[in-house]
Length: 386
Ligand code: SF4
Image 1 (tube, rainbow, N blue to C red):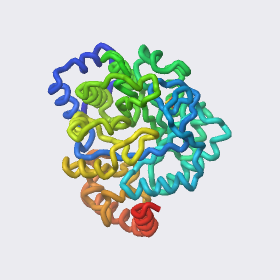
Image 2: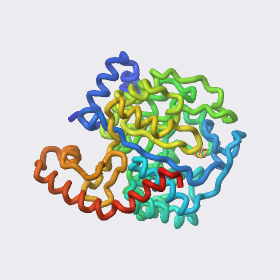
Image 3: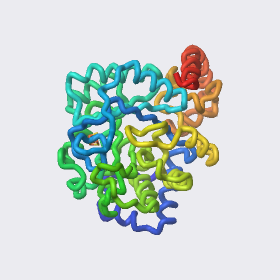
Image 4: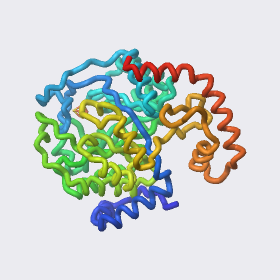
């Protein structure tokens, strides 16, 4: 295994960006294969639980109250509506459910409703993620106590270019929030947006900032700017797709154990670009009808491409003993020993034999039988759109 580094210098990262494309991809893909199954992609679903009317001025964002984008604002959703969406996400194969609210930061009085959402979504057997803006240490602790697995807070771009994109909060504010999330014991999801008019050095700067975090963020979303009319970046020139793929590859090299996620902007990427991104080291996508407020390729298109590429949706690996361990799209009628063996190999190296895998698979399959009636009816409900 290659050494995981946290001391990347900007110049080194720029050198990676400058490599011949084939050399860069070969290096990124080789590293990817050391740490991940190259034919698995983790699937998350994102729900906007509070939309629009955000006081911040992020130049790319249609949810800012400062820009005329025609977006309809919606207050914080009720728990039942969130759960309905989470069940549908689970039935369509998502293993992680992300809830996003357009806030500068949540108010302390919002925390009881937010923590209730976390607990209820976790009880469905989904990993949970939230993105709510800046968090205080206390807020991060409340969310962690409720069982929130991941908190998303992006750095967006390099420290230097940041001033051109957002003026209402500092880069350091973002780093502070990430620090509170880590201190509370949650996993970090943090990445940025490319195609906002930045230079290569800014893309290098963004990735370097992420790569010097200790530990690295577990999830690194790389967004391609969605040019929304009415925002300051609505007319931004399109980024060369090759530059986007380079960014994915460099992220993979700098943070070899992180999930690198294709997020916003996938609507603009054709299937060949998706395939190249998976080869370069992307191994997570947001899937479903919408990515907060911008379009996202339909879930069935993703599954069709997965099938053509021989890619499987990744199943939850955090607790193979967990009775809620379930993936409607990929688990099949029972948990197979081969699947468990793969999970054990990834988590524990060669410490477990086939007998262990068979025993665990048997236990998990029995436990699944206990929860299956609920999941089957959820799937039926989702198929009917109710
Ligand atoms: S990106 Fe987040 S903080 Fe910035 S305007 Fe949009 S919702 Fe608000």
